[in-house]
Image 1 (cartoon, rainbow, N blue to C red):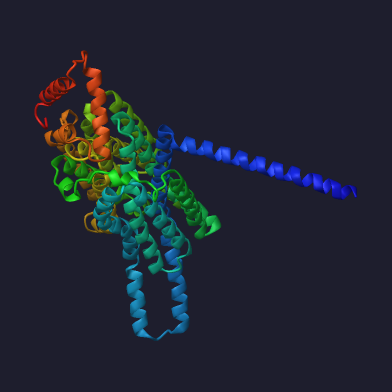
Image 2: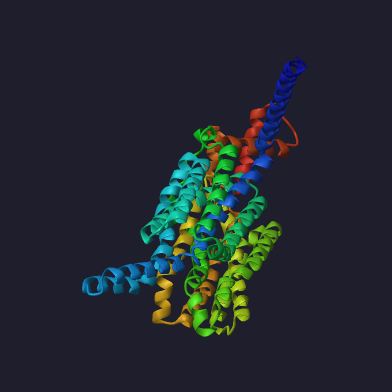
Amino acid sequence: MEPEGNTKEQAPSMAQSAASKLSQMSERTKQLGNVIQNPERQKRIILIIVSVVLLLDNMLYMVIVPIVPDYLKGLQTAADHAQDAATHTNSTNSTVHEVTKGNFDLQIGVLFASKAILQLLVNPLSGTFIDRVGYDIPLFIGLNVMFLSTVIFAFAENYATLFLARSMQGLGSAFADTSGIALIADRYTEEAERSKALGIALAFISFGSLVAPPFGGVLYEFAGKRVPFLILACICLADGVLCLTVLKPFSNRERQNMPVGTPIHKLMIDPYIAVVAGALTICNIPLAFLEPTIAKWMEETMHSSEWEIGMTWLPAFFPHILGVFLTVKLAAKYPHRQWFYGAIGMVFIGASSCTVPACKNFGQLMIPLCGICFGIALVDTALLPTLAFLVDVRYVSVYGSVYAIADISYCVAYALGPVVAGQIVHDLGFVQLNLGMGLANVLYAPALLLLKNVTQMKPSFSERNMLLEDGPTGLYDTIKMEQREKKRKGLCTTIDENGIETFAQRSYSDEESSGVEYV
């Protein structure tokens, strides 16, 4: 009888302990929800989400460098044996076989470029879509597409499936990268904060690009083709869950009050934005053109081993981080000289690119490659926040389309690189390729002088009138009106009985202080 009594006594105690554990879990869940809803903490979590997106995208972009060529050669060898076993006399089959072998390098180049080409085509549409629906839904869509792309990469068994996976990655990047950077620009409104946040995101881009080849090469060698892609897919899945939990993309009602963003074609013809886009394209051309050509050049001139080729770009991560750090610090103290930091970066890139062909060994080659990555860090960290500032002062503060233009600028360089660079080296030579890229960067640097007076611009007269006279019509207008009310209260030293007269005088003085619409 005692065991039955003990069982009856234990049952209520177990139920009580279970109830207490459930209540503790609910309390922790509420605390976690409160932490997530805190604006400052949410901004940091959003920065983490976007940084992981950019890390994954660039790791997936570069991780195939040591994997796919060797894997496709293996498939080609298997096809050779199968064909030899099937027939030795069919001349038609042998002709097709020779053409396939001759086009192997072209197939690799097209496969590498397909991501950037599709991303380039989709970006104008994704930028408009982001401006219409907000930043969270496109970010979540992009993460899902990137996850599917990574899984397809892991289980692909032929060239067509690899091409599909690579193209899908470009589709996902067009949504995830653009909306992620635009989301950072939207949440970090102060220029110093925005520069720092975008600098952190750029550091993750650099880390992903530089660490992916050794990461993929080592895992491919010891664990097989699928393992590196499955690891990236798991990270992508975890980031998607975090995005769904924090941003709640399908329950956010704020997008109903979002202002209508400026059409992308209007932003493209803006002279200041066009100058920035040109700088972003030209500064990334050396990196995009060297990645597919430098390995062959190192084998021919330096007789470099595989590990030296794989480790070529890894040391450049540290000067890239240094460039981001310096630009953020300088921009905080001297924000009106962003154009100058970008120009210095382009000169660094040009000089470093010209010295690459003069290197005689692996140790010497690391120096100009570090200089190229340092210069790219200066240009990107200085000019990406400038794009958001230009939209703030000249248009409506919606950033999807303007960062789609920035993404297009990158994609132009990386779409041309795998296809064009090899042909230029074949026709003109590796030395001429580097001298041309270096000269282009040095000659373009003075064009950034056009951005010299950007920081002195003020919002347009029509926008000010709309905010002051028409009243708030959306989320953007409401925030701006509240900011202006706070400024007005801070500036008023005396308060009249007639509040309307004080408001009119202050509005009039504000209009006088702005003077011309643009400097």
